Length: 213
Image (cartoon, rainbow, N blue to C red; front, side, top):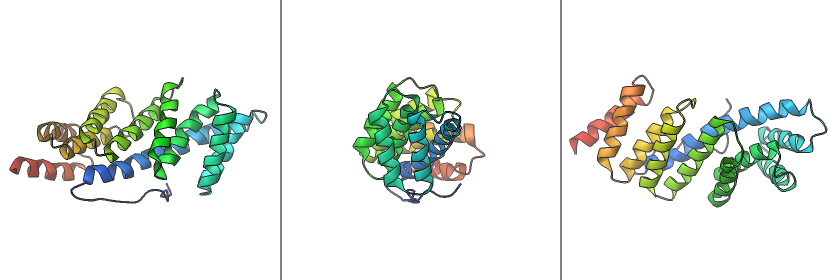
């Protein structure tokens, strides 16, 4: 997948958890957003009269062409003019992503919460939206609360395609909050469950550092 221009790789040190929440969460959201909007755009070709679906399709095209302001404006028009439509529900999700990626967390929270509280059946998108909200909490340096949120998402969505990242982010946030025992517990769980993951070596190093303190 082409790298999203919103995403910057920011592997840091003392604020490792906070920085990686933006990178990892945005990547996850971009993947889900492209899949979700792409599916609905294909449906629009069968329903040309449905203005709401067409607007969502146009927003997706603008997004793929990197016309992010046009994508946002189209999604806002969709949200304002067809707020109860199925297309608008997906539009809320995408607006949350766009606002998060452009550094407007309050607006991201508004639209992700609209999406989550609606009648949505796509559990992957719900999980991604909740992860975005947890990422905002972490970016506000409320690490303990963010750790709790990521841990809950990990438990609530066992079939999520990238579930291991929720556990990884939960552990890092507990570590950033100074809850070392809880961080150790989750890092060890990560090794037990995802020992072959590319992140596993890094997690083993972190566990060794924590054990030496």
